[in-house]
Length: 106
Image (cartoon, rainbow, N blue to C red; front, side, top):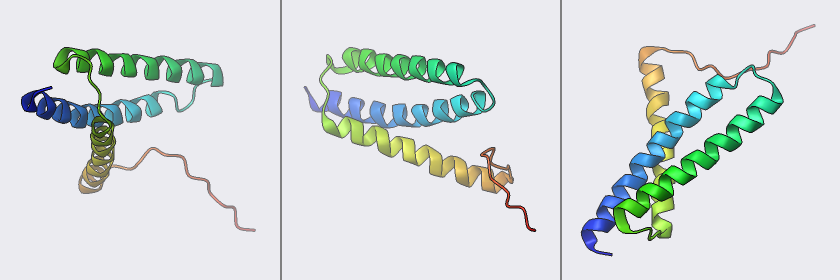
């Protein structure tokens, strides 16, 4: 694999990690109040589709050669998107939609 293909693969893995974080957030918001069967089915389908898309695109980019640092950059992109979106929500003062338990005071 040439240096040019490696750099393109690294950038693609980072951007795909950002895309994964975005899809994960969107999927979490969709499944917030659904049945357990629907959650499991949709999560399995989503994971299989995203993995298949990643491997097909890597095959187009560099012939399907996968190195461990591609996964590392994907995780870094995933974390980068979460940190960026958290700062963006704080800047625009958008509340997070996660569930918090309230404690009753007696």
